[in-house]
Each structure stands twice: as C-alpha cells, then as structure tokens.
Length: 382
Image (cartoon, rainbow, N blue to C red; front, side, top):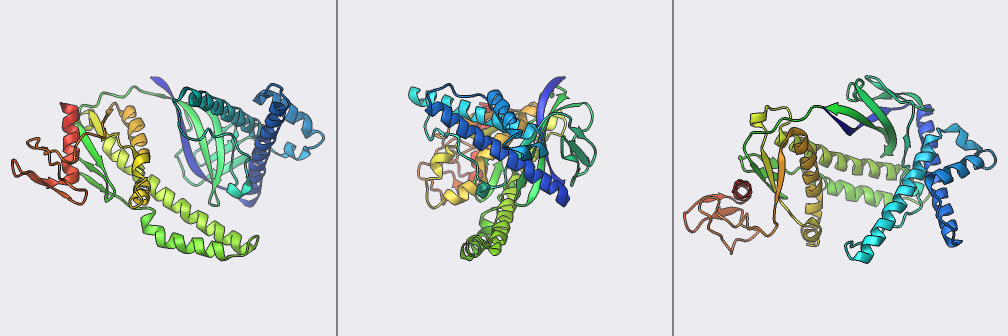
C-alpha cells in the first residue's frame, strides 16, 4: 500500500446565506493577496528584505483590530493560505528569472499581478477541521454545506489536507485534497496500443476503435458569437450588461465542461482501469506533437486548440500510471502517416488532404489515421 494525494472536485448546493459567506471568504482571500503584493513591492522598493508569508500574516492579524475588523467574519485560513500562494508565486517567478539568465527558459517571466473582481470572484482554501459525509461537507466558519452529487467524496480511511472553494459561471465548487492508501497496481499484460490524435476524430487506436471529436467550441461558435455581441452592445455598468456577462460565462463553462468530460471518458476507456490485467494495454504509444508550433497555422489553430491534445496526453499519463501501463512517445519527425503499416514503404508525396493511404509497393489500402496508429504501436514493439 502506498500513500497517494488526490483531489476530488464536486459542486456545492448553497443557500443565499452560504453563498454570501463564500463571497466574503473569496473577497478576504483576494484582499490579502493584493495587500501582501503591495507590501512586498514597498519593502523591495525601500531596499529591505522581502517579507515571507508568515511575517505578512502576523502583520495582517495586527491590522484586524484597527483597520480590518470585517476580517473576523471569515476563517483565518482564507487570508493565510492566500499569502502562502503569493509566496509560492514569487518563488516560481525568481526561479524563472534564474532559468532565463541561464538560457533554459523562454516566454514571459510572470511577475505576480493584482487580483481583480472583474476577472472573476476567485477562490479560497481552508484547512483545519474539515469533515465529509455522503452528501455534505463541513468547513470552518462556513458550517455544513450540501453537495449536489451524493457519494462521490470518500468518507473513510482518508486524511483530509485542505478544501478549496471556487466559483465558476455562477456555480460554486469544492475541491478536497485527500491523502489515501492505494494498493500497488498490477502490471498490465494486454496488447500495445498506438494512438493517432487528430481533428476530425479525437483519437484513432491501432485496434480499430475511433473516438469522434465533439468539437466543443466549433459546435457552439455561432451561439458564442451571438452572446458576445449581446454583451458588447449593453451599456457599461448596467444590470443588463451583468446579465449578459453571466450568460456568456455560462456558455464558456458549458464548452469547457463538454471538452473535459469527453477527454475523461476517452482516456478512461483507453486505460481500461476496471478491466483485468490481461485486457489493459501494456504500453500506450503517442506521437510527441509540438502543439505550440502547430497552432501558428491560422487555418487550423482554432480546431487544434478545441481538441485539447495536451490535456489528452496529461490525462493518459497519470491514468496509465494508476493501472500499471506505460506511456511511450515517438518523435514528431517519425513518418507514421506516410509509412505503410504492412510492408514499410514510405509515401513521400502523401498530402494532409489524403485520408486514405495507398501503398504503391504491396497495394495495401487503409485509413490514414488507422495506418499511423498501427505504425506507432509497431514502433514500440520493435
């Protein structure tokens, strides 16, 4: 048995009083983060040592008695954990600066920014006395909150580390970090599976299975444009503009949830966690695609980002590890689509528009994506 830290997220079913209390906690966490960032900048500008999270929290506690009495209405963990997040953000920022000097980091350094309500209500993290039931969770200062999903959060033989409450498109969620014991997974003994990801089909497997792409953004693009226009035409600061913003946020959340649900279902079917060892794939082979370079194609960038290839690969990696399977990546320069999976002949003239592979040597005809998936599986076997 090994100890594993896992996160479980589920939606909350709040009444008006509980929703107001959550808004107060989120506001206190946001205020503490912005206040700590301002104090950090002041100390650095004065040439003094930058404060850490503990010293900032002690200073904030002293201000509660005089300038910030409203902070007594929320749990002390909300601003404290927010200051720890600020300290972590600066630690990562200085690491990126060091890597930038060494030439091993490209991109923006990401100096911590002030948080604004215009970019969302945000979230807050709580620690301490947290208890979980079948359809409820008890949090410090918030009391017992109902859950919309019954029996999802584990209630026995777990060590509760923290709980993060967040808001997205008018809905409130709680993410619980637990430490639980997991049995060592058995070694998977099934066949090696090659996976060719694409736009028309999300994934084509070497065993013949094809998972279609739901096109979460593409299928809602017309509706999304309409709601964006409706929001832009409303007068700034008006109630109607706020209503239009909520409708737009709900649609964005629906698109994201549709994409996430599809990726979770497909990756779970591939790793076959509930199947016996003989039916779980020994190795899962993927192509090491450079997505950041592919999205520079103006004609395909929206379709590529809509699929979520990076998230697909991330989910496969951690789910395969849980079931004892290996994930192997093949170089992006490998001509998996242009190589005949039967005789090995390479068609240098194959175009992206050619959806069927015709072998000039042996006459083999096969779907282009299936041919690539079989070649990826053979690459791992060889």
